[in-house]
Structures are given as C-alpha cells and as structure tokens.
Amino acid sequence: MQQTFYKYQGTGNDFVMIDNRQETFDKSDTKHIAFLCDRRFGIGADGLILLENHKDFDFKMVYYNADGNESSMCGNGGRCLVAFAKQLGIINDKATFEAIDGLHHAEIESGIVKLQMQDVTTIEKHPKHVFLNTGSPHHVQFEEQIESFDIKNLGAKIRYGSPYNEAGSNVNFVKKISETTFAVRTYERGVEDETLSCGTGVTAVALAMNYLGETSKNLVTLQTQGGDLNVSFEKDGNSYKNVWLIGPAKFVYKGNI
Image (cartoon, rainbow, N blue to C red; front, top):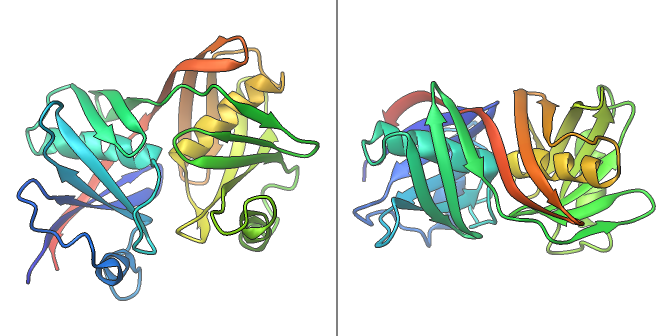
C-alpha cells in the first residue's frame, strides 16, 4: 500500500506528517512506524505525527517516537503540525487542537509558529538538577563543556538511571550565555540519541532557569544545535502559566512510500 507523507522540521527536529483524517493509517503497527522514521531504510525522522479529525476543535495530534511507540507531547512536533494544518487548508492563522496532554492554542505568522504549552505547577529541585514536566518529563542540569562532551552516553546513563528507570526522562544539558540566552543540548527518550532541538525540552529549560534565579526575564532565547527558539511565560508563585514556545516550522518535501 502506498502512503503519502509530508516532511517538516522545526530547528532541525524533523517529523513525518500524515493526514489521517480518513483513518486509514494502521496505528497498531509499531514496526512500520519505526521503519518510516528510520534514516537508512525509511524516510528518516525524529518522530511521526498523525493529523486527525476532532469533533470540537480544529484537529487532533497523535505523536509517535522514532522507535514506533506513541509518546508524550512533542513541542516542535506540535508547531510543525500547525504549519501542516495550514498547508492542508484546515486552519488559517490560528488553531486549537488536542494532543495527548490536553488542549493547545497556536498562532502562525510568516513561518513562525507560537504554541501554547501546558501550565507547570510543580518543579522538583535536586542538588545537581531540576525535574519538571512540560508535556513530557525533563531532567535539566548545567554543563559547562556543552560543545564537546559525550551527550549520547551521558544522556543515556541519566535517562535509564535512578529515579527515572524504565519510564525514563528526556535529559537537557544547559550552559548560560547571558541572562536572556541559554545553550541547550537534549537527549530524547524514544529517539535514544541527541536531537538537534526539543521543544518541550527548551520550554523546561526556560522555566527551570527562571525558577533557579538564573534569569529574571519572562522571554528567554534557547540556542539549540538546529537553531534558536524562544519561550515566554508568566510566573505565578512557584508555578508558570501562559507558556508559549516560539520558532520556525518549515515544510521540507512531500512524497510517497
């Protein structure tokens, strides 16, 4: 069976997009999803996203990691899906859609997609790291040698280690550039490697840096391997609301496989 797909990327975080409004895609076939995401034998992507109908909102997002398993929220994937929905003519410049972590609002202008993330009410501070959930779980720690260290092995050690164990966590390494700018590298579970960018990851880093007092600003720039993203937010006590992930989302190509 031939499958039409679209390829999108947001600061190098790339996705296979499929219009599944007719519900023809077999969501139970994890091996096929992993094959489509395989960079040598398939299309190649950090994840696969299905756009589906929703009875109350513009559309529904169903996200799979590159290993073929359905996963928690993907921020860059959500931003790319909004651009995809506009390309399909489903939306104009604004969208409301449902993902695995609930409702999201989004705006798109000149290729820049602003995606509203969920409020964060709990941040765990530990001696050497911070842990929080921004739609996906994220471990955040400082790393001065961020340009040269072995992120795959160190990230995997933390991802599979205590207290995360089998469920695992995404792992973000951060270097402070200035009060408004931080460099970030992320090891993503489900990809089991570094990705060029992670939307929920940079969101977690921005909130964590404010929580730790590393920045007093409510608009932060995050430098990833794939480009810059911005996160804006409002602090409410020790909680964060009105959190927005902002950055480019670009169509790469359309194909059949």
